[in-house]
Image: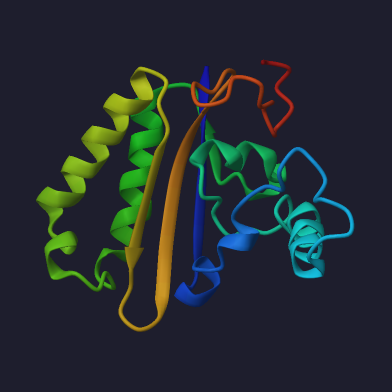
Length: 159
């Protein structure tokens, strides 16, 4: 088991577009029905795997290209250190002053390390001053508890 880190910074408006944050359903849309529904399905098939915008389900990061992985760690504590660094880099810009506090950031990191230790995933998001959103995730891989069928995106040979 190991953990992959993902980070995204972008316009909140892009993050709010749930259509690119969900994989297409495993079935084709009904034929002869609503053209808009068929178009949304085609877009999900084409866009979801490639967009760097965070998926709604954290485990679905594993479906994305390996180039989006910001780091890989065998130990939860190492992944937590990366998370702490990532949060600290943006904390001064968090829209909520309470979320900028060192104590709060430390609690987030400790909680994340605990969750990773039992094989869980971590996904955090923060509004930044202005219209920007920062998302950071740590995903347990090989296997992932939320969906053990998902394969490792970096090709470690593990399942």
